[in-house]
Length: 411
Image (cartoon, rainbow, N blue to C red; front, side, top):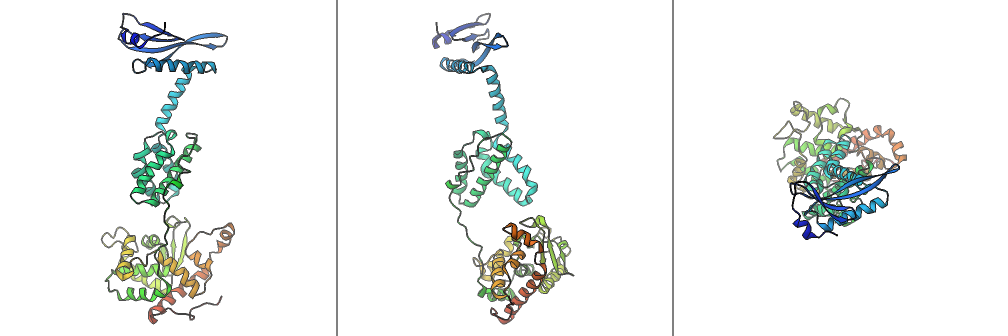
């Protein structure tokens, strides 16, 4: 006779364990302590003989009679396929234990550790901070194999809700890389972050604010007059940024050890460059004079541009941006804008070839042919160009207008 739920509830403990059978090998075992355990008796073939085994299906009433019967049917199907349900259950437990260890956070930290030496410290810290702030609280504790696109989308939409559209796209990329890491190590089989970019709101790309060539006299005049009463280091930083058109970060993090003023050369080490290649900046006479002036006052510090209030740290990027704003160029010019200004002016007014200026901007060559051609680096031509650029700016400052023709080189 098959069991009923009433019979299961009514079963009382005895001095010895006893069983209430349901058929098909399923029974409820009642122990002397009062525990009621679902068991299934079955036989498997071992060699030429059959061996009787027991499969545990849980505790009553946590596992109901109906659920125990479902477990029995599942076990029968496995037996029909030649699979031992006890062995299968052990494998599932091991897999569950592996999943519990292979959470998204655990694998993300492993991925980060593998790649952080290939990144700048600043980038590595940024990646980890963004994951800790926006992703780990949402899906960090989940086994990576259980994460679906909807989980990631929900986390990223919270980021976008506060207006951080570009960081949301970056975080999606980081998540996709973590999943690729898991796939390579045969921990996951799918990458739910790979195809959800279209769900996110697009990032509105905008160019850095940059003056027109005809506005150069206005800027030079404002720097010279200094009605805003900028600190001398801030003024010189803006002028050197204009003369060298390096990236703002490359300028404010410059150290005295990188400069050879006797040979008018600044060598920025590879680890400080965006493309991870050492970059040579030929220095004009005007740039060397400014650096000598700075050295007289700042040589005791590690940085060419020490912080105004904390000289053991370098000047902040915001110092230059605020300086330009105080000079009257808020929203019209940024530190990065000097790169675009130099490119357009040197091409248009000094008639230098694009590839020479591009190399001085330390842009990565786009094709294999360009990379091979780039070995020469045009250093001699760049030395002349940087001096021409400085002289051109001096003449604009003296004449108060953009000069046409006088400084144009022959093509």
